[in-house]
Image (cartoon, rainbow, N blue to C red; front, side, top):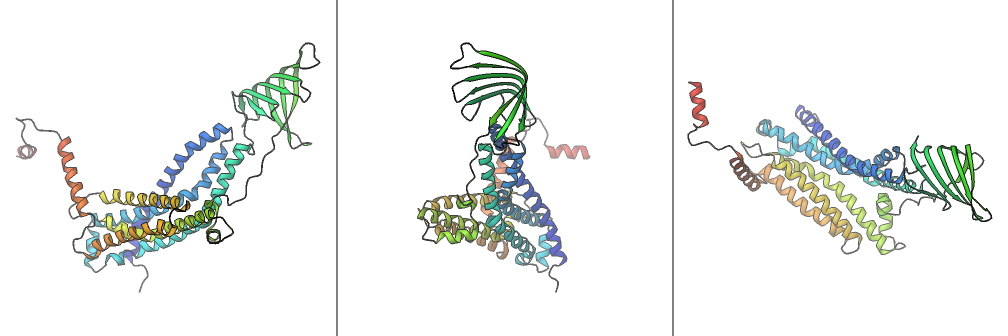
Length: 413
């Protein structure tokens, strides 16, 4: 007996293409939404543009864990909807293929993607989240070599103020420079130059050289009767780099722990009650999100088959609403459980039991009740609303205008 028949391979092709398309579309929308915020953040901090793409790459595992379940459900839903609309599903049912048998290939996809999602939420997502926070820290502290902010006074080591009109080469080549330096003995130097460029100092790695071209130096302070003015063609100005703090170790937040680490922390008395609650909440949240994927094929089939002689797409809309709403309920349950107000098992697995019971009932209606429609009442109400809207917006006939049917008959004659 073959593991995959021609029917299974046909269903696999129908599922794979929309599943991949929805996954790419959902991930792209999430990335584009975050990209605008990151560009604004990096521009405000004066960092290089390349760091934006590094931060987006570290956010991909988190977005993938959200896009994979949605792609799986909509891929199966569109495949069975196509079979139902073309009456192929009726033929398959007539030759003895039940819904449960037709779900063999969708469940293969579900098992493989659930394993991939478990790997992502267990290891890849905590690591990528830690690296994302590290990039943010280094950008704020200047460890990424952030360029000088144009048009603003930049404070360096509390004794140097620097302002530039424009910059090139990621902040290394500066134009229109104004600097004010105060020495330890109280003297003040005001420097203006046409342009300048940063160079590394091999003798002192903690100091960079700002080589100025075509400018003036005005020196004043205690012991100087009148300000001194010096014109130069080239002048090297040493600037001490600020000391950069080391980034923290991984594990400051529960989202950065691996799944085995959450198991060790959640029931370890050496940690505080707050940390244990956060660990158990994060552990149950990750597991329930993965286990929920095994219910998605049943939900997709239950909502994919419209009523007879109907092309309603209400099931597609309702499936997205149900999955997104359940995801938000899980997030709320995790937040409440992290505060210790409710047990994580109740907060996260309670909604899962209710959601599972609803999906199993919907699948039982479509698969084992003759003519059963799990959302039949909603379909009827949606059809009435659609007809009312069509009547509201359709063009009204004039009193002396012949009906369309009569016009067609006259033209035919």
